[in-house]
Amino acid sequence: MTVLTMSPTLGDLLKYELNASYCREAVTLKAGTNYALGSVLGRITASGKYRLSPAAQVVGDEGAEVASAVLTEAVDATAGDRTG
Image (cartoon, rainbow, N blue to C red; front, side, top):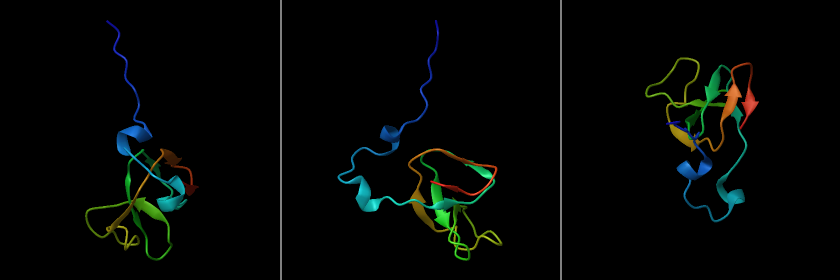
């Protein structure tokens, strides 16, 4: 029997949204990571860019340890900074 696998969708993450313009904003994601849908992000204080929120402070990325956003789409930023 063939097994079908469905990739995650926004419906798996977000069950109800009254107004998409109310709480969404475009942010710059730091280069070097392939960000998945639903990634928890933290804002780097010095640059204002976002990266995956680590459990502890990372030298050079101070501030990102505080979770402040959830990514609503997959973004490949391995080659450079991207907007998401």
